[in-house]
Structures are given as C-alpha cells and as structure tokens.
Length: 474
Image 1 (tube, rainbow, N blue to C red):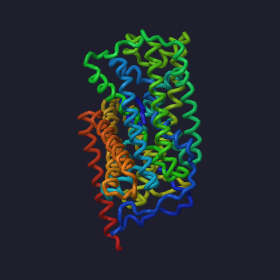
Image 2 (tube, rainbow, N blue to C red):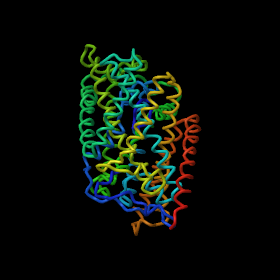
Image 3 (tube, one colour):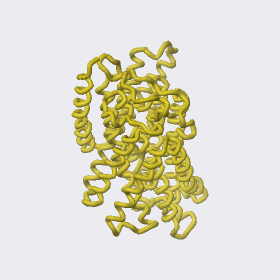
Image 4 (spheres, rainbow, N blue to C red):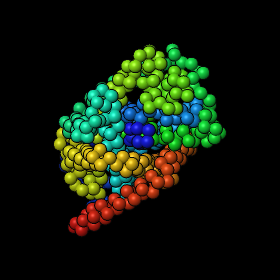
C-alpha cells in the first residue's frame, strides 16, 4: 500500500455464521493450520476483491512518484516494468496458496501451515505492525492535502483533529460490517481513478518527448539508475496480498483470490506507468525534478490555470481515504487469524457483524496515538523512521509466504502435476522470493536493523501466549 514516497502500503472476514473463535488448532498436539477453513459464500465478489487490492496498492504515493524518480531519467520506466513482473509473480503465488488454504489471514496462515506456530506468529506480528503504522502515515499525508482545501495546519489541534477524523471514519465503516467496507472501497477506487486516468490518457494529447529528459539522468549508468529508481518504487507495490488476507470473505476464494491479486496488481501497475509517463511528457524534466506536486503541474500544463493543485488535492484525499478503509480492514485480519489459533490475545478474535471489533479498535487506537505523538511533539524524524521500519515488516510475510510455496513444492504435496507445471510453479516461487528479497534490500540498512528489533520484540508476546496455552490441560 503506497502512502507516500517513503511509505509502504501497504483475509476474508468470516461470516457471522462461522461461530465463535476456533481453538481446535491451538492446543497441544495440534498441527499448524489445523483450524477450519472459512465457509464459502463470503460478501466480496471478484470486482470488490480486485478493488481492495488496487485501492490498497494505490494510496497517495502515486501523486509524488513522477517527481521522486525524475532525477534518474526515463530509465525509471524500466524499473516499473521489472517491478510489475515481480509483483505479479508474488500475486500468483498468493493465489496458489489461497487455493490450497483459503482462510482469513493470508500470509500468516501460509507461514503457520508450512513452518509452525512461531513462523506464523512472526508473520502476523510483522504484518500487524505494518498496517497500523502505515495507517498513521496515511493520515499524516492526507492532512497535507486537506490543508490545500481547508487551511488547518496553522493550528496543531485542528491538524490532530483532522488526522484522527480521517482515521476513525474508515474505522466506523469497518465496524458497520464488511458489506460497507466493500461499498466504500469500490466507490473510492472508482473516484480516485477518474483524475488519474484524466492525466494518464489526457496527457497523451499534450505529450512531448522533448520534455522527458535524458534516459540516464543520474549519470550512474542505466543499470545503476534503474536500481536506484527501483529502491523508491519498490514500496509502491505493497498491498498485493490484500485479497489473500481477506480470502475467507471472498466469494469462491480458491479461484478469485488469485484473479483479484493479479488483476489488482496489474491494474495498479498500469495506472502507475501511464500516470508517470504522462507527467514525464507534459512537465519539463528540469522542472519536474524540483516539483512538489507533479500531477498538479501536469494538469496546469495541459489545461492552463492554477486549479490543478485543488483537483489533485481532492483526488489524493479520496485515494487515501480508500486506502485507509482497506488497510483498516487488513489491520484487524492478521491478529484475528492468529488469535483464533491461540497465538494472539483472544480479544482480537471477538467479532460483531463478522468484524473483529477489537482488532479494528486497537489497531486504529495505536495509529491514532502515533499520529498525535507525531503532531504534538513535532518529532517527524522519529515518525519517518517508524515508517521506514514498515518497509521491513511488510516484507517478512512475503518472504515466509513464498518460502511456504517452495516448501510445498519440494515436499510434493500439491498432488500429481505435470513436469512443466512443476517447473513453472518452482520458477514462479523463486521469482517471487527474489522479488521479496529485493523489497527487503530496498528498505535500507537502518530500516532493516530497527525492523528486526520491532519484529523480535514480539517474541515476548509469543512466549506469553504459548506458555499460557501449553498450561491448559489437553
């Protein structure tokens, strides 16, 4: 889920008829992934699941991406192509894993089934950190766009109030039930694409190759420039796992999770590529490298006037609200699935109208606290560090999921398959694993170092939960 140039963006909810939280897979002697699968007939069809993926991948970062990669030249367009191939490979792997086990929790379920409770916990814990910290970042970024429409940043109280409102409105939609989550997600996804497509398609009529600048603007060689641009663009594809996280609420998840993951990822990549290409061809390169609102500059260049900033601010707010809506849902899913298996506190498994109520409330509460601390203390440097940490924490579940797919292939437990299919699935798994490693490398040394500390801090939670669970009589 892309939230800002440095922010990663970065489960089907069980229906009310699924009964109380299951603990059959959490007692002594139970194998990983032994809990029941979600019932079919969820509330999300293929269009809504696809919108969830696209909406979570495309947050607010697209509105800054062209300026962020402009210093590297048009070689950054090659980075888009390479990253898209890697992201679609990862989406296909999630589809295959969901076909094997279409339960709520996605990466958590896959890691636990393949490698046991501890790996599953690390995946759920890592993903949960990613969701609520990224939600705080989304709210902070959204306030910046809101200030264009309603100047509020002269007052700390107004700024905090606006940020909290932007977080809690999607939370209320989630608490109302997954039906409303789907409606908000589809509407916001459609609305955000109207201005984006206006620039992407309308820009073709104003496109001038002379404005695009040099192929290798950084002077570090095309390979070095492509890699450097990729380090910025890598985080734009986080969110590809969204349909897998919501598999239990997706109708016919064995088929639709994979389809939604691929369609949503490909659609997001197409919007990214066309939008960036249009901005490159409508805004002079010398101006673009210093732009703070590249889409606004593109609209102004296309149609004249200065209304582009207002139009893009509205589009960004719609985009970020949709991303907050989708990621609030996902913020409750990983701890919900882990709580059902006894690896997270049981309060995360409490449902109302098919929604993990306390998962939503606790996640939004933590994001709100982080937001208030950010604005009240002015410690934006510390906040940016936390955001970079999510670049690491978001990648851990990807690595464990792709490793799980390779594990099942090595064990030969996918049934009898033709050699060609086996080789294809192995190549796909290895490609997705390499893509996940590239995401990890793109986070940088400092983010990985601090991310490891965040990740291992959760071990205390695991020790507490595992110890209490093992005390219970068989």
